[in-house]
Image (cartoon, rainbow, N blue to C red; front, side):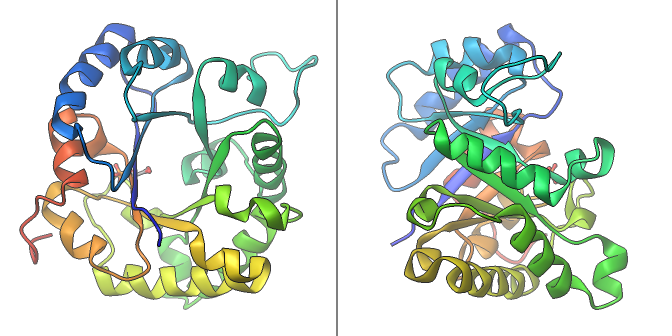
Length: 255
Ligand code: PGA
């Protein structure tokens, strides 16, 4: 049984005070929700403040990126062990913004994911096609290639610690979400690839949908059999809308 996992990716938003205020607003709204995993991914600079504000709660902390090395001459980078020391249990790797704007490759994503697993953190590995690729009917090829590269060499016995996030690039920050059917089709394909690579354990890996998830469309997306939660950008910046997504308080059918 896969538990839904909801992560708010704050991207380049919120200072420490804003981050702590968000947590104070979120926690009472999600108290006692044992059936789901809830994750906050603030910028590096707010990780410590969020960790302090989350103390004693079941909400988990995530980083938005990581460097694969444990230490060394890598100016400006942050190691998996440093994230663990701050209380992070997850880190996002391979987000499409990092792939498009910062040159992140599938091989780079795989080495980050491996380093996270080795340090006891769970990677949230992002994949997804661009609009051009979808229009050219290349979605499955792109997903297959990204999965093969981004998960290359990861130990089979750690498959259950992985989280995948299917995020069609054309749906991110655009207000234009994939339809539930379109998302399910992609998730089912991702699931097949995961089972092919990891065997039975592949069926237990949580696959989040990401791309313009909001309270109004969350319920219809989450009703799909292979959608196990969401990676939320814009609507994750407010505790109220993020908690509504977690509660699936949505009017099905609206977009
Ligand atoms: P969005 O972002 O919810 O604002 O579309 C999703 C993401 O980038 O993970």
